[in-house]
Image (cartoon, rainbow, N blue to C red; front, side):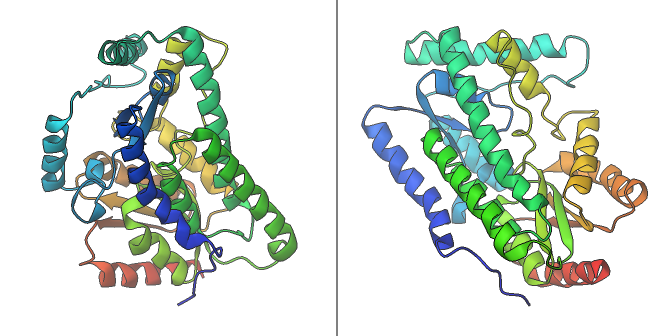
Length: 349
């Protein structure tokens, strides 16, 4: 197996997650508004406009399992936790993003979040505050997207393991300006590293990961792929640029623009979901991919439903090797996964 080449300060990345919980505790005790977020569809801009700190509610279960994407027992714990919260707002998605009335329905759901934040915190959120939050979040999206796109370089100067870890760790950074500054600095470092040490050299097989979030299986799948001799160069999943590559239109009415943007997210909960195939098609070409690994986590049933269409598209339309890994957050199937991934990577040769 190949030992991964990671930056000297790599061990500090996961610490951002641990430190975030302590930071949140301090902020909460100081009177700062704190809002937990479970899904990509949540309009973070409204939380920012309410002068609240948003944090992804992961790592609140046993063994730091991301509750939002785990087993039925984990979801039971999630609902128990939610029942203990002072307040919980649930957004209802339309049955599809292109159906009659879908945008207007979703716009009303976005408005309901704004009104709920105002009622709960006894504040008024102005259009100017929302526009300012949109601008900040768009800057953050660009910084994240630029970091992801380092994987386009061939050979890649960064491991997929680092990409996945940095992105997941930075989701716990409350200060968006700090997050943007770090990502811009790291992106510039990697571009310089590519020019000095990687440009013109041979590339290992290049793998794109699609499907479910990989935050909870970074070591189990992403690290194993790279230690077995391939490079994970891109992510077409919830941990990837799916939501980041599409900024909010800053020229429109802010509520309408937010509703339009989040309704365009290519998530498998929407049917039909042709945007996912379009995004996958583009990433396969742009990242010069040699093979696709689809991660299917138990209880993420909508991705499992789409997997046959993804397999057909990758193998028939793009002519590339494809493998689906059905797994969970336990380690019981690690040996089996290693065997399957090893055989798959040999095919990429």
